[in-house]
Image 1 (cartoon, rainbow, N blue to C red):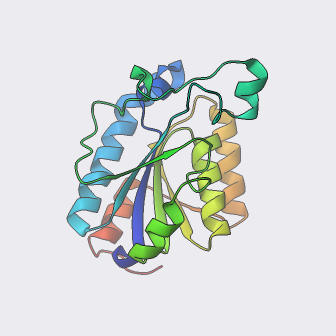
Image 2 (image 1 turned 120 degrees about the horizontal axis):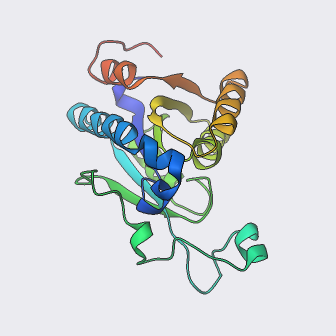
Length: 192
């Protein structure tokens, strides 16, 4: 990972996701790590993408499970869609998605390509779903992915660990801690 071709993807750091008890318990620690990553990215000139999930009330963006349950959520303008108040979003590029992957139905690929990004560093929630699918799709787009292990959380921890093992085992993503990412961005480790 080098500063020159990295981007930071902050995924689903929205109030609604932190309502689940496990995520609520992890909130302080995860957001402290995310804020450290954002500061480091800003200092190193690494672009930051703030990726959120929002749906339309008219059902046109609903997933199959939402349609099956006849229950939508994360509607535009609802309080739960708001980015967590602890995060300073200044200078971040916002991308809205309607599926787990930040690549599907968004202009993420074009934006990364225009910036010369060949590597994404990911933090946020929920690991077994949105982070995992974004990492898989990064791999499908020939973009390397690092998941920051101490800047993620999940309300299904058993699934989180299983998915991370699969992603690493299949060489679709690597894991790193905040400290390692910040060292790389500050020039302490320029090796891929």
